[in-house]
Amino acid sequence: MLALRADRVYRGPGDCGPGVLVVEDGVLADVRTDGDDLPPDVTDLGDVTVLPGLIDCHVHLAFDSSADVVTPLLDDDDDALVRRMADNARTALTVGVTTVRDLGDRRFVSLVLRDALRADPPSGPELLVSGPPLTRTRGHCWFLGGEADTAEQLRAAVRDRAARGCDVVKIMVTGGALTPGFALHESQYGVEHLTAVVAEAHAVGLPVAAHAHGPAGIRDSVAAGVDSVEHCSWFTADGVDVDWEVARQMANAGIVLGATLGQRPGAAPLPAVAHRLETYFANVVELIGLGATVACGTDGGVSPGKPHDVLPRGIVALTDRGVPFDEALATATTTAAAACGVAERKGRLERGYDADLLVVRGDPRRDPAALLEVDSVYRAGVGAALR
Picture 1: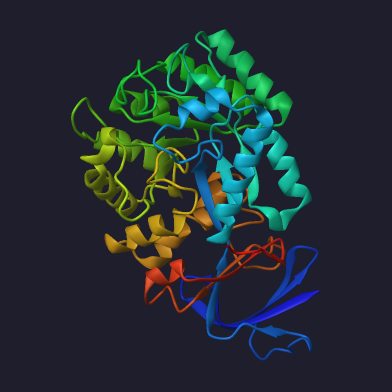
Picture 2 (picture 1 turned 30 degrees about the horizontal axis):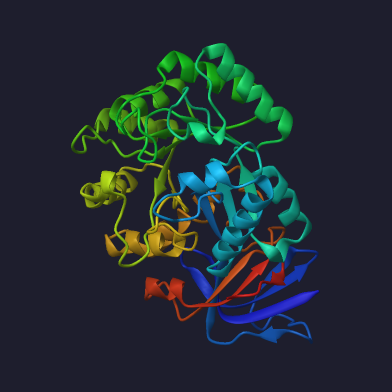
């Protein structure tokens, strides 16, 4: 048994005060108010805030955050790739990210790492995986091995992912910044293809995460009933154009907006998105105000500005733009847990939940930048080594 006392234990909006967390077998056995029959061997962490471990809903652990992420993916063997992914996972853990959803690896190598991390929780976050994203022949991120063009090929690919034990199906509805061919705003699949994927995935119990930058791709994703629209950028050929009617439909249907936030300070964004980034942020904030379900990811690994430790910065960036702290934090805790299908055991500090803890110096409710001041991280109740 492990018992931890702190001056501030964040149980949810309006409920953050002195408390004690009791951990048994990697799970929170109790969450007590300070002074309620304290265990004799309690460890007093002092003037810190204990928060639920963060959940990054959108990462690419196989990507090395370099200016050219594609060449290593083409050249490295599987052993080297798994080692890099494990190192990137540890990087995420050091800033309090205790769960990550990998939305695009190469030929299912993430399954190997997922099993290894389950066997040794303090070595990295819990990993949820999609395997290679579904994409058109020579489409966005084709080099990951998920090419499928017809509805039948897509359905077969979904069944393959279910048989392998993937946690989610990822489909590249539009183009992206890393691959020539389809531009960001151009659709790779129509609503008929997407409907086939959603029906097949839901039949085998898997959610569908749709990468979509362009308005047409977002509209078709919503019409098909995907579970999340990743990025949801509303990018046109040269700007941003939100279809607010579709946005309201998305909010009303509870389809998650998978916002990809967080940037290394001083790093330039990818050229294809740099001049649209502030508009993107403003739209995400407005959609939160409209009641959209927003979960925070980072797209970690895709560029030098997106290493695997920027999720806390994404939360802080939301507060900088007027989102209240509790709502911003929820995008990477409670809402993120629900988006990833793990809400029954992650995202809260409650009895029976996984003992995944982020301990920070200071009080992030008063100064959200305190999220960056990591004191310690616990994964399944075991302290993780910080770099």
